[in-house]
Amino acid sequence: MMDSYQVDGGIKSKKASGKAAKEKIARRIKERTDIHGIGEASSTRISRSGGGVNLLNANYEITSEKFVRSLHKCIANILCDLYGSIYVRKNYRELLYFVQNGGDVRPWSYAVSYPAPFIRPLISEPRVVNRCLIKINNKSHEIISFIHTSGIWIVGSSPHLLNPNLIGKISDSIITELASQKEHISKKPMTGFFGFEWNKEKRSTIGKLKFLWVVKEIEGKPNDDFLYLLTRCKVCGQINPTGIVLPREIIYHGNVNNAISYSKNTWNHYIMDDLVKLGFRIERWGDKNLKKYIDQGISIPIENEVKKMRISNCKINCIGCNNLIKFSSDDCFI
Ligand SMILES: [Zn+2]
Image (cartoon, rainbow, N blue to C red; front, side, top):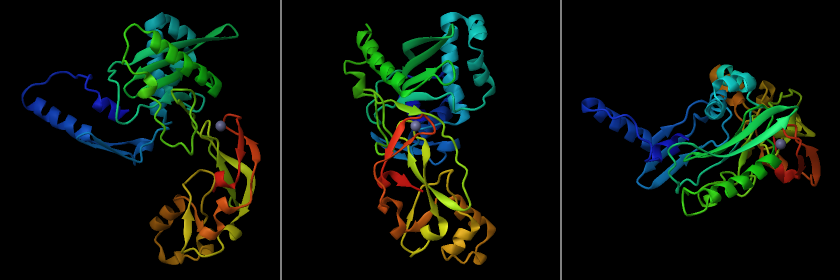
């Protein structure tokens, strides 16, 4: 988002003069060429030189409370413009409470269609493209989509509103809506600018605009006795235990010098005893190094790689979105 903001030439800021102006220009050039993420995107780096973009650890599934609250603040502002703040205060209390006070991010999911990294339509002011009114028990809920250089965002006014089916329908109606607008953003269809897929193997996208549904994950509780065999739901991104568990002594047995590493997750972690089982002489390590090693993802001898297990055509329901996940050992990790 920050990168999009920087590359959008349509965004103008207040004019400054003299020394302040010089400093401002220098700062903006620096920001434009070198962006460092914060919070959960702290390892993200985006650098630009000329027409080239270099993305390092770019994170497209941001669920930090600050970010999700900001997105929902946009929706609250749009609703205030439409209905006036008195009406919104009365009818959208849950939304306002979340924006002002925060809380559990999980029910407040969103969907986003990311722009292609190299070509972007310049849309400086976020523009509402679609609204979807839902009545449940006489109470109105809205799902609003807005378009900006940084993406097309779908955000709901109440918790638990979004689901893949609805996102697909909204994606279709956004395409129709954009095509029927008098003032076109571009002659090219929006599918030419948006719908960037960053990790096709891990996640599936929804609709022609390839929306990514971003839901905060349910965290796991590691078990000291075994490791969970895990698989990912491609619809919501949730890591799911498969129901199969792996005894630690078996999984660590073998040649540790030829190892495979798995990404860190909340379901599996090292316990001190593991390092001994893996043959490390931990008495020589400092507490800091030990903690650092334990906090990272699990590494095991490559001969025990879980993708080599004989598991095929298994099914579970996602603990996050209830989607039926079909998996084979190739879809598994620990
Ligand atoms: Zn799911």
